[in-house]
Image 1 (tube, rainbow, N blue to C red):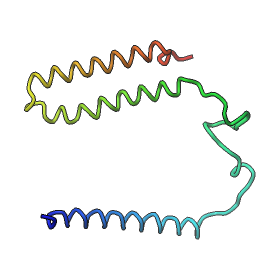
Image 2 (cartoon, rainbow, N blue to C red):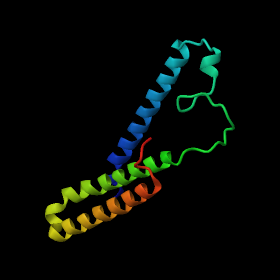
Image 3 (cartoon, rainbow, N blue to C red):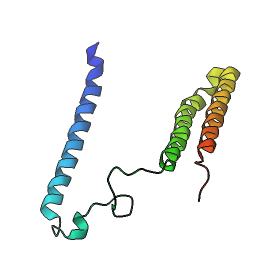
Image 4 (tube, rainbow, N blue to C red):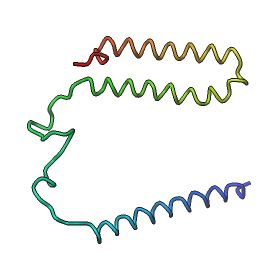
Length: 123
């Protein structure tokens, strides 16, 4: 029974070793061939395209998180739509209607939440 898993184990080992070799050679090549000319601009902290000017614990605008929620909403729908589309012939009308209900719930509830929080309004 375990002999059936030997090719999978070999595939995983080869993939791991190949990844380690690529990362190792890239690290060695960048260490040996890379330019080492540090200056004040290269070593200054950088985040989101502007210099940090206040306390590191400053508040972020909520819109960043709301846009992330929109992305997760669409990502979740896409993750469920692919297997649904593949098995649509097997699940029939019941599966089609249940997916439509799922999509309506996710879209309506998600967009209502986003609209209420003001994520869809741009300045």
